[in-house]
Length: 111
Image (cartoon, rainbow, N blue to C red):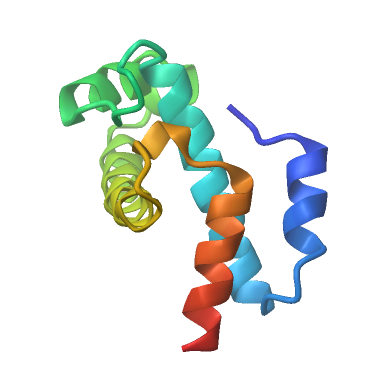
């Protein structure tokens, strides 16, 4: 799943450095993908098995085993970051909003 133009514009409108905006776009994309993978998990992220199953159903990924491994590793990293952000916000990970992601990135840049 791609993030929409409005999301990209909101991220690009932040005063974050370019690398942080890129990271934020990737996290937003992963969050959107997680929502597609498991729409009925009451806000929890899909587990590793659901992630793999979903990825294997994507034609571009299914035809490239090396890319599948890389993608799953990146999704696992994103899941860890989203879980941490969710804990900081006292929310379930799939309940995070773009505003939550932006605020977390801005806090990280201030440190």
